[in-house]
Length: 200
Image (cartoon, rainbow, N blue to C red):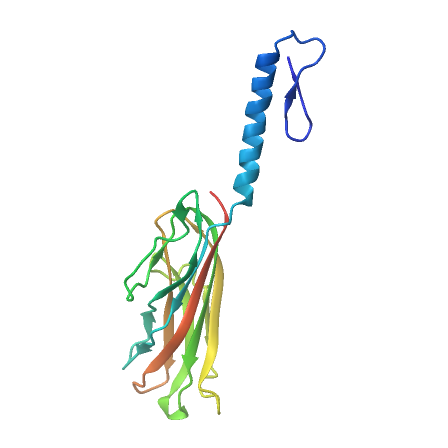
């Protein structure tokens, strides 16, 4: 029975083995093929994607939240012919569907427009959605500094790690908290990045 090398488990004949060169060479070639395929898979890019929102999303009246839309694909890597996220062309797209299961890192950034003090808007924020729900609810970030003098926009971001299965969706939701009134809040340019860290 052939022995195996310690690192890659490549088979090799030992003196006690019967002389069967074709079988020994086939076993070695098949094992090398497996090892090289594993190395090739490791060298392929991870499933990752980034999408941009270029159209302002405005929460008017007394709206406290609204799901953000995406218009452009910055990148959407493919592996084995399958893209990280299902491609889209509808500029009103809000849900981004992943093609592969695994543990995903999600990072979203949004430029929020500052508001006058008279708007009575106490907080602007964003939260990451999984299948339309804010799960877990800790994937949320906001700012109470909504009336910064001399500044027209400020950045809000949120990030999390999520276990996703193929077909799950990810998105961003804008949040507004008002002490009174019905002033609108505008969220401008934004991005969301999805990086598949592990498989399941």
